[in-house]
Length: 318
Image (cartoon, rainbow, N blue to C red; front, side, top):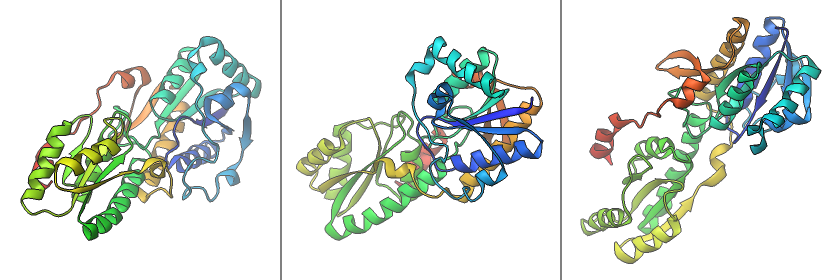
């Protein structure tokens, strides 16, 4: 193996640049030729590929987003589309790939591995919805972004004696809502794993208002309901004046935290080590304080941790 490519795919996450830097520099340290692929699998198919040196990744460890950009390509599920990507790899003499992203990126890396290309996948997503790792690159930064935003919303909610419904990202994983809710001291946390019905939410908030509470904070995972309609119903039935706040894509931006930079650095180096060991079709994860790696196919079949151990924490302090 002499040449390694790296791409970022799907939704961007803070820390992706730190991972790109780690992979490039670890590869160069081991005398490999390193290539970046712009725009994810789309750029792979189109041949948007560039050889890079050490200076290319200078001064990016602190930058959010991904300097090699990202894109989505649903057509990559098709064999003929993947064959075009493999043709581009052969054209550039690239022997292996490091793919950074979420489950869609993992699916693409698995498919390429099955077609003979050694791929290592790294978990880069703010949603923390990759079951083969305790934490993904970008989750901690997004979590801190949410906490900062909620702290500011609390100031105005308290001043106006309001209830704030804050919708956070996560797709079908509730970790951002769960962890931020505990960190912010939310009054209610609603996720796909810990759901409350509309009536239960209104009933609980109504009881709080009846007992003299004059402001409240509710953190809810996206895709569970229309938060503006929920805010309207809460205001109508609970006694609270209520506003809905959708934080949106601001959660994807910003300079990565030290934790995300450290994790990205560790995982990037491990990706190169696995390739040098002749391994492919693997993904890197974190279990406790230890790096682990799994077959991508096995990783995609794993069940996500729903953090049942935090239920008592929620009941005790929320």
